[in-house]
Image (cartoon, rainbow, N blue to C red; front, top):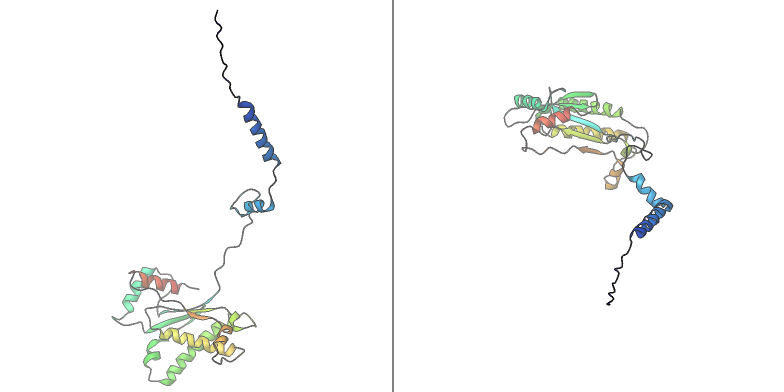
Length: 228
């Protein structure tokens, strides 16, 4: 009688091992503590609800500046860029710039005669006209004075002159600003470049790039006229 032996196949039961791993994982999760640096990460993440919601912040304010606006005489607020372009085409002579300008500082303004500035034979009338520009700008800037201190601490001034007009208008306004500053400065400018750091900032707005859009002149006029 023959005896047949059989070998039993071995099997590994993974269920207890999985249970053990899960128990260890739960243990480490429940007993772990986050460091201060790791907590700080959550405070940097954007959120609009829950305990990490940040308090409302003030809107970013536009930098303060005084705008001197120079644009063709007769134009007013309330029109669209295309309407300003049509007005400009009607008042402009072929191949020529606009002769008369409106100069505005804050709520104050006056008409500036370009012909008188460029081809005047009457020195007295020219001096009176330039004097009127100086008076207008001086009285307007006096309303924006911020008190004692260096002139560099005063509100910066930007001169916006429509690029379709002669820059003599902008230069007259610049001279008037510098004259006003000379009456307020606590020192006399001697030509030392270092002294410029103590003077109020006065700049010209950069001119627009021309001829890349048929609507460009109308849009430029719209922006200048509606500046505050």
